[in-house]
Length: 173
Image (cartoon, rainbow, N blue to C red; front, side, top):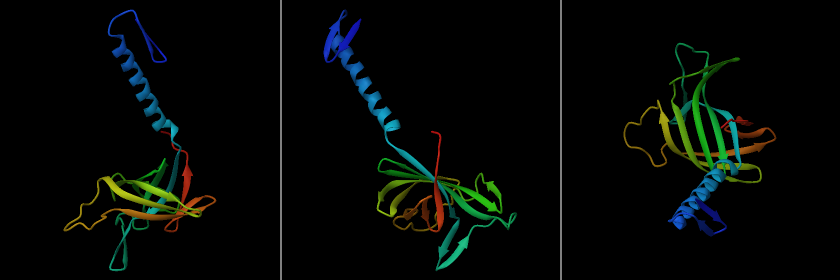
């Protein structure tokens, strides 16, 4: 039997000091992990980003020949946690009130980075983390390939990035 009490060790069996330190270390580790998981405020915002690229000043947007009236977007979920920001993007097609969620068109992008909050905006710096079902570059890769540098203008309803509103979402973790 072992009793640890405010740094004092009482033992009925041998090797008590080591056991007490192990218990204390486990308790400390659990406290740290719990504070990281639940103690840091987290806010999540959801918005859209067009699935378009620009080449030589021309805008080229993704289309699906089987659904020509649908416009394709990346459904973007921005999560702010502490001084970090995470972006998850999945492809969706929208026509009027109909939304299609794709299993692979356009890929699923994941970014992580930092942000700086200013009086009327948020400056977001993201680095590519990984991607599922994404096209791979051909030829030399430029520095900051797939990096995103965004400025979000604050509004009463959330913020605006590239003309698209991002609203706060209640996300279950």
